[in-house]
Image (cartoon, rainbow, N blue to C red; front, side, top):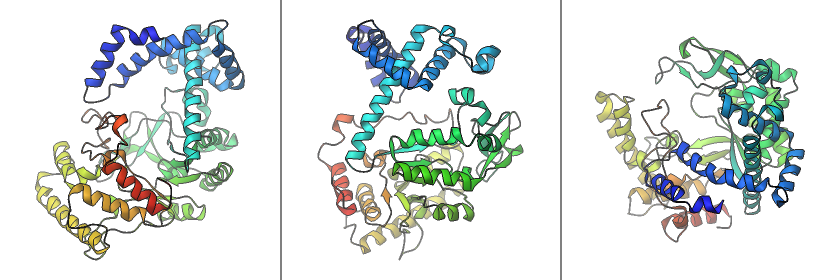
Length: 440
């Protein structure tokens, strides 16, 4: 393993990847795998301490063995939709897969579970725990769709109906849960997913919480304009969430952004799920009250991964990007910029009235002041975006784009080692800790 890391090829490829402006996940994983494969080979040798550890892990985690077989088979046979009937039906045994690939995938599952466990324990010891995300669906070629296919609707993808931004609707490409099949099976798959997440999480965000009520399904090949809603028994799903939340002593947060019916937020309140408050959506043209305060039953943040960073929003770089992408018409540009200018004036005055902002009103000063406002609120949790703390302009994700934007590929502006050196970033974190009554 050390020989691989010291090789000239490894050094050259690592340097090339570090020099890129954005993350190349495929090349990075290929490079990491050269080290992990070497580590796996050493671990599986007769007499190695790790071999006994791997054997015990495999014995205690049959699903990890099943997953390793699936991954090993997929590497040689691509998507399971084209497999033989024997393999497609889920009857994969050790004799069906390449043993080296199988042992590699089992090894990395063990190491990943150990690392996540250590991080989760540390997070809980220092206050709260990890903040994780429960996705809305699964990739149609992935393990879950193969092993648990009866739990998912076939012949369609989840998506969204036509709206002002997406006239043709949206097709998100992943499999939605089957409302009847999951119920017939006692929600075993749903419960297993939630328990797996909550075993490491102190807070769990439910992506698109409206999905507990209904999912917009798009038939394959027809497009979002021809979809329809499939409804779930929401009270049963809420009951599962609240029960598991109690058992694991963890917060559950519903992602309730966008157009959400009142019935959903009423149900969230009734079942004590936290809602999401986003500062960018809560600013308004009101000289006396330019920022709505976060409600107590909420997770407060300035933005999300689908919105501009604070610096981009405050300096109107998002307007430039929307013009470039065609999301904003040139005829509307002047009005948009003027509206943003007045909004900023009102926000600055609002913060000064509350003695959160002095005469300095640069972007970083305003950001720190708004963070103080959120931290002083009654919100249960406050989230800070690392990109905001570093003054990043580039968005991590622009909804409605694929090749147009390098979504989820931007690197942090500073190296990890330099993140918590004394400076403005640590000052903001210390101020938040003080206002929230926690240790810094």
